[in-house]
Structure formats: structure tokens, C-alpha cells
Length: 402
Ligand code: C5P
Image (tube, rainbow, N blue to C red; front, side):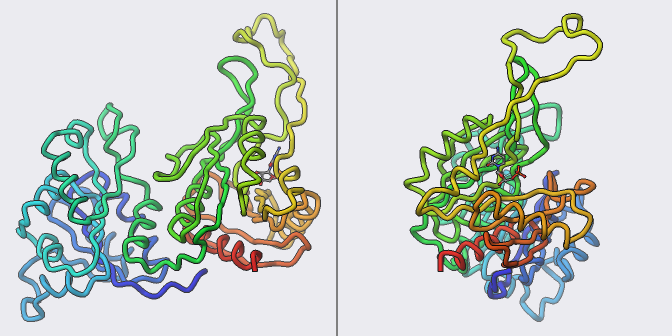
């Protein structure tokens, strides 16, 4: 993993159902080696327990203005923090910050802070779109507060819409960007990243697909952007939102993905093919929905091979091309040998290999990878949050670019 200097972070948790997701952000900061001090509002405890927050942050959790008064904790916390991150930030919390209210330890820490403030709002769509909240968010942005926009999707009730707290990796990378500690060592590098899975249609509603979530690719895109790269993202079908603030091309099939990638290669310095591209597609797509009675009891599907985008792109004279290999290997030795074979057969500069036995790697928040060069050298291993793994992969990119 890249050596990042240890940050002192205050993570404020306010009372919203997304408080459980704050645990993921705290864990990511701790795993990246930072000192995390959690400050919870009383309402936060309705959603997540103090013991959980203490266990995950490896620190006692503070919530009262009146503990440790001799240490002037309510001021010291804010003054000493490299950044304060509030996740989730409720509409009430946002309004309180705008008004400069300090009814609790978190409000005091926010007022006394010297470093940046990052807020990740989470609330129902109506509350997010209410004129008061819209105004408060605009005021916070004007004051330089980093607002990590909520995403769209299912909310706590039966409803769905904008208001879900942003994913952990977005909050984490926004924080690193805000403290300006991340080396901008990829400044000016044009990186094309593919992510998610392709779906190859059998008929208008059925397809051959895979369970790639796009999480590792999104983490790569976020990390590359924070490190100064200019990133274009080619998105297959994904479980997570594509990264915000990045150019995106949607490409749901192997053939669409091929065109989206190949047409950009001349303007790309590094291609990272994290997408799970289907190796085959149905020879024919029925324009009408296939009917059970017309297929008989033992139907077969004729498949044709898809273009191998990675192998084709790897022939580009200038672009550095990195592929992925998701393998059901029994151990690291087998994984390494499969990765070496893939790197040479595809002609890639490097292959990032991970084991996908029993649900690992695919669709999860963590990953465990070995990176090998095109000529079979092991370049590194990384495991942990997909954002940390992404940083390691980008370190390899830097190394290969010399
Ligand atoms: O051959 P396999 O599918 O295991 O190779 C995985 C790597 O090749 C991934 O980087 C994937 O994005 C890429 N790939 C591709 N085109 C295909 C199949 C896989 O670019 N048709």
C-alpha cells in the first residue's frame, strides 16, 4: 500500500439510518492507517451502537460536551483534526452548521475546526429537495465545505430517489482530496477504466451476464482522479453508481465496450480493463421474447466468441494496458500461474489477479489481489478495502510508466 502520512480525522456521526454505513467509512480510514476520533450525536445511537463505533475506530467515542472539560475537548477536537467528516449528515445537522449552532460536541468541533469539513448528507428525497436544505447545501459549498452528494436508489421506506448516503469510497476519496495529502502523482495522465459486467442479450428481456458489481473499477476511478489523473470511465452494468465528476460512457455489451475503448485508445495513456466482459454471446438475439413452448424441453443456446478487447488494446503501440483475471484458483501459487499465463497470452503490461472462490472479490467491499507483469514478474500484492487495493494498483501503474 502507498505510504500515506497518518491523518487525524474526526468522523461525526449524526442520526440517520445511514449511520450503519458510517462504520464502513471509519473502517476504511483506520485500515488506511489514520487516527479516527468518532463524535456521535445522541440521535446517532438510535441507529448504531457506541461499542461498534469504538471497536471499529480503535478509540473511545465522545458524545458529551461535559466530559473531560479540563482538556477543553470541545475545542481541541476541532482544532487538532486534519479534517472533520460528517457521515451521515442529516438535514438538521446541515442546518445547524449553516446557522453556526453548537448544541453538542460535534457542533462545537465543527465551529472550532481549522481543517476542511466534509459532509455526506443522507435523507429522504423530499427533505434533500426542500428549499431550506437546497439553500443550506449551497451556503455550505460557498463556504468551502465539501459536500459529497447523496446517490439515487432505494431509501429506507418503500420509496426510492435521491438521498442515499454516498458510497464509502466516495466519502473516503473526497476526504483525502480535501486534506490535499494524496500525492497528485498521476497529474496529467489520461486513464481509461472499464468496470461492471457486460450483458449479452438472448431476447429483449433475457441475457447472459455475470455478477461483477463495478466496485473495484469505481474505486480505481476515484483514486486515480484524486491522484490527479484525467479519468474516463466505460461502464458496463454495475451495482454501484459510477463515480461522480468523471466522464462516463455506458457500454452494456462486449461489442459496445470494444468500440468505446478502441475509439479512445489514441488519447489514452493507461487502460485498466476491470470490467467482466462476457467471453461469448448468443449467436442470435431473438427480437421477440422466447417462448417456452417454442423451445422444447431441452433447448441449447448457440454461442459465438466475443472480441477480446484487452488482447486487441494491448497491441496499441503507446498505451499501457492492464487487465484483470478473476480466477477460482485453489491457492496463491495457482492464481499466480494463471495470471502469468493470462498476462502473456493477452500481451498486457500487467494483470491484476484475484480469487473469486466462494464469493470473494466479486460484489464485495474487499479484495485480495496479486499483480504480475507481462513478463511474469510479481509486482505486488494487496488486500483490504477496494480503495486501498486501487491505490496499490495505481502504484504499479506509476512503476510501469517509469
Ligand atoms: O480471459 P478473461 O475473461 O479471464 O480475461 C479477463 C480480462 O480480459 C479482464 O481484464 C477483462 O476486462 C478482459 N476481457 C476483455 N474482453 C473479453 C473478455 C475479457 O477485454 N472478451
